[in-house]
Length: 255
Image (cartoon, rainbow, N blue to C red; front, side, top):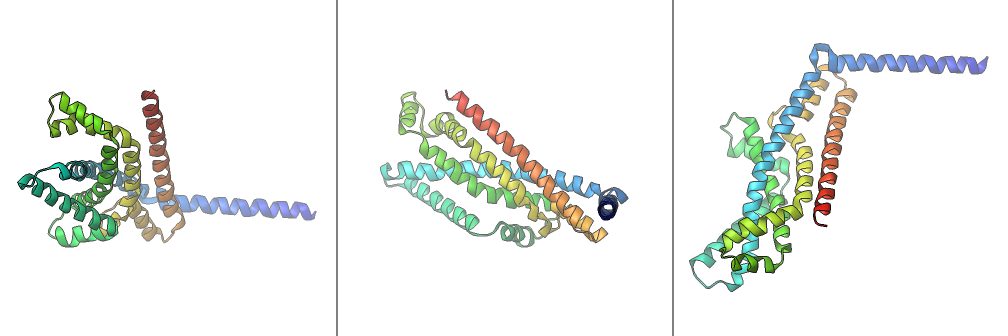
């Protein structure tokens, strides 16, 4: 009889817990279509990430070319305006990398929004620029390492074909360097997705902010915050799988 009462109590507790979870789910996601906060937030997160990556790659490529060109050629250049300009550009790029990599991205986002673009009403544009500039600093070092890994014989091969330095970099070196660092660039995209979770600091309703809005409406933190965490986890797992497939195909293409 004792075991029967215990089993009944367990079943009753489970039934009560399950009903409570269903009520919580309805309150947080179904009632008043609150799930739309997460969907709209997810769409905003993906948009910010996509455009920030484009800006980051563009800035990163330019910065990497300047840094690698300085490291490879400045010692052999004759004194003059070209050498001075290259040193100046390299100094600017190094300052950019030091400042961006040495300060928290949330501080950069708030400076961009509240100081640099204080008069702007386009919050998404400000976030894209802030995250793009931040990402560019890390992309620059990734691509620079790829360029420096290319054998100098490739430069000589380009010169033997009649290419100047810019053409050699554009048609021979950069494509090989990007191929070598493509998995690292894909991982930077994954990191950037998670970094955009701080967009709510400037009032953008991204995925994290969407979950926080639901929490403020229902006074229940468990469901919305876990939902946000699960969505981020699914996104990261998906793109990590894509990166693994990309790495495998790159290895196969080299055989």
